Amino acid sequence: MSERGITGRMSVPGDRPVPRPDNVIVGVFAPMGLGSIMHDLADLFIVEYLRRRPDMAGLQIPRGAEMLQESLDHYQDWITRTRGTGQAGEET
Image (tube, rainbow, N blue to C red; front, top):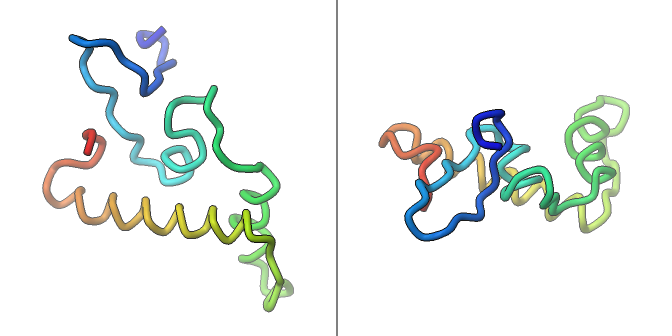
């Protein structure tokens, strides 16, 4: 499966660790592969599309979308910190 690009974060002893995704949305939304989606797709739509529209200024968003935005910000910070050290993508 990994040869086809289908990977997960689950491993057994002796396996090489699977690197963390460099893409913020993938890293937060499906951290253990596509079978482990952690957030609601509607929250992703709100955070990545609706909140960026000028006509949606002041939009009240649900708590799930707020938590997703916080997770995206946290993951982006991690990528920014580790990219300079050569650790981006490595397990922490």
